[in-house]
Image (cartoon, rainbow, N blue to C red; front, side):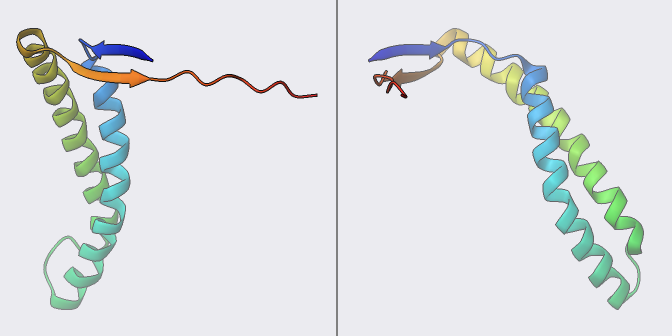
Length: 94
């Protein structure tokens, strides 16, 4: 078994990943806001389908950078996340 510790994270790497995840989550929320906003009047209307995913992606980017930086500071003082990996023998294909 291999025991490893994640001591540092690249904040930009986390930011890119969270931007994509938040942006995808923003699509159905934008559709819901466009649908119900149009029914009850007010709101962003159909522009919510475009604006909400972009806003969510931006929030994901900023929060990803913040989380990455906070992880690096915390890991320096209390230690990083540890992982245990187990190697399995590879099967030889004929």
